[in-house]
Amino acid sequence: MKIIALEEHMLPRDIIEAAGVDLGLRAGKRAAELDEVGEARLRVMDDAGIDVQVLSALSYFVQGLEPSRAVDVNHRINDRLAEIVATTPDRFKAFAALPMSDPSGAADELTRCVEELGFLGAMIHGQTNGVFLDDPSVRPVLEAAARLDVPLYLHPAPPPADIVSTYYSGLTPEVGACLSTSGWGWHSETAMHVLRMVAQGVFEELPELKIIVGHMGEGLPFHIDRIEDMLSPVVTGHSLSVAETLRRNLYLTTSGYNSDIPLLCAINAFGVDRIMFSVDHPFAPSEKATTYLASAPLETADREKIAHGNVEKLLNI
Image 1 (cartoon, helix red, strand yellow):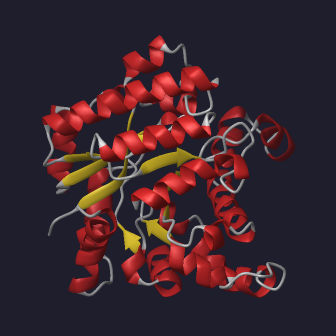
Image 2 (tube, one colour):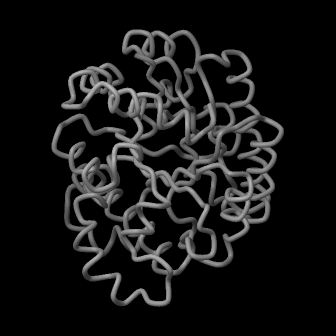
């Protein structure tokens, strides 16, 4: 069975160090694995039975830099990604990193990456300096993605300092860091980010815009009926309800989730055609993810869709 993994991170250490960016504790521990896109990564893929990784830079460190620096650093990261893909095109594809502090520059960079470098879309990491994707200032990026017919993968990012202070203070540093990110906060914030886009009419204005979220839907499948009951009555004047909009514009990946209950919930809420395989390398083990995919309670046709068919259709691979 062919397997394409969709949320697989990299980060060129030399470019990040030259930019003077601190990777912090979590990413810093994985710096060598993030930087490795050669034989060692290919061995991980081979051992797990993964045919293709769609690479994305863990670029929340640089997407919100001062605009001119952000444009320069993200441009260099994307050029490096293009070199990696060109070296091993049968094993690697790429999502662009975007300088979101300069929306016009980000739209131009997305266009360059898709039209000139052959990238399949872009990954955006949460809000940028307090600005969410429903803000009119970032509409050029969304318009470019819709025009180019490529998805934006909305990935979590560390929360702003005031959120950390309000919600995660009084905890040990390790517990607070985990609870504010991968242990809970990332998922709820990303789900809220998507719902802001729905409520603010982004998908009414751009009905063809495609958004991908990871981690089996960031909790949205579990909550979708409650969201529909409570939020749809107050989001007025739209052609579709909140749940209808989510099911039209949103795609989910399995990244980091390898158990039946969230998978079956996602399938029941969104349909198997909206779900795609991911690992979240190097933050999750590839072999664990593919082993679960092979044993999950799925019909053969549905397993093939999640493993490769749905992403091939979405990304025109």
